[in-house]
Image (tube, rainbow, N blue to C red; front, side, top):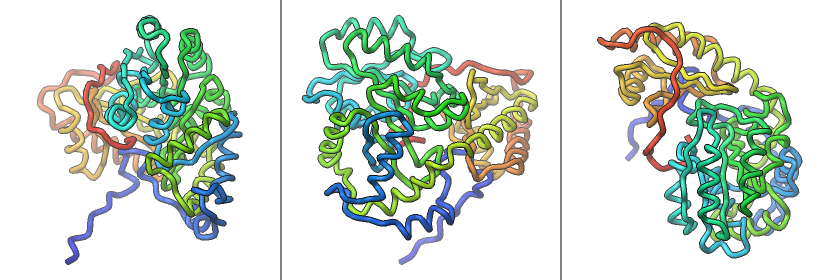
Length: 375
């Protein structure tokens, strides 16, 4: 028995995530024509090309293709030490690894997860991070940093910021992992190659299914010996794929589209400007904005705000920091921006007691969020 068809939201008005992109004709053609082997045996030529090109892009010796960014971030600390027992991972309290991937790291990695307070840009507060490192001196430790910082409205962290965290971690003998799910956006926003942001790290996760729009996949980069350990661990986690060239081929197309991300930033900037003009609406202002806009309507919780916008056909993601999130990608343009601003205007006007004047706000700390693959 077949159920009713699931309604598909209008892609021009679906701002929940940049995972909402669909493969275009060029990606579909690349998948259909991909030369394949068996990646479990290391002889899928399309996967090998993707790994080599990504390693070069990130400035690392090698890279490993995995099904998801969450798996890349789980493998990252486990592969950091020859014996993965007793590993401690320090993550930002508001980072993706800290509140969306925490259960997986603990349950499937046997990892001790420690959260550290982040500043308004998304960086670990240096004094708090150093105290945690000093308290666990001698224990195998991995410090993780997310770039862009999702809960800081997609703020891009520059090379100096990344090096400061890496330097502190290395001073205490810890490893440094960069969760670069949207590192491509950070690089484009800052006008630097991805390698400039990735090379301070011992390992880096790089998603091709978010910012770049491939249908699936992420890569974990680092030294050759590190990636070899990660490849063995991938098998144990059930992440090995066979004729994976059919999904690696669209990812290769995606790697060629980094310059196009600037258009996503322009769309997000136009959306933020439109929302700031709506009376009673607050919009976060990150130091280095990318493709995210976070907003709130005082007097209206994020779930209620998201539901109100959905009634106007606009889809957003409610967040535990009291805001709703818009993420722009290649399906969006000025028509979608105008309709989104109109929907927010209508929802805000229906709230009986709003605080006056549009403006900016600093996000409160996120505490709890449902687990799952990256939003």
